[in-house]
Image (cartoon, rainbow, N blue to C red; front, side):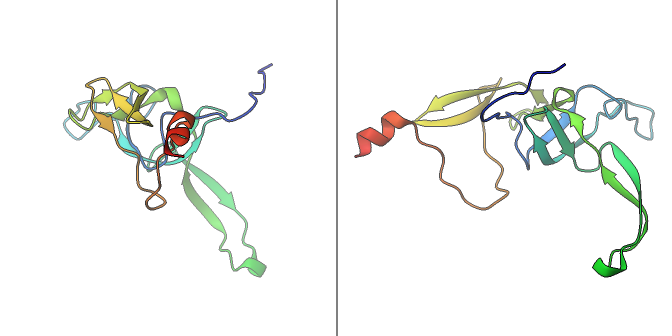
Amino acid sequence: MKTEKKGTVTSKIKRGDQVVFIAGKEYARYDSQGKRQPYRGRVIAVDARNGKVKVEGANIQKRHRKPVPQLNREGGIVQQEGWVDASNVALIDPETGKPTRVKVELRDGTKVRVAKSGKVIPLPNVFGTKEPKKIAADREAEE
């Protein structure tokens, strides 16, 4: 049985990132010429605790939904994205456009994601502008 992780679990893949599939059934998509074109898409949800992500337009599943007249919800067959293991996708390098691994570095007192090429991968602006987290040593120096 899997052990339950305690505390905060973070993922290097964030909501709004552009990713490409490196494994699984979406990796084996073929275009009209018969060439393999791994699927590229935007992350719409991240479950860091279980290591899963949802990618826009990938792993489409059909759900049979009953109508609920009280909530004005239509019934029928609904298509929605399913969860995919985070190990099956890789972030796209902003410089080369190819899949890349990511490491977290400390630059100018803030944590940033860095691709293999050394280029900083900016945080996606999903919720609007946000101040980056400062390290405790920097906060003490400011005070």
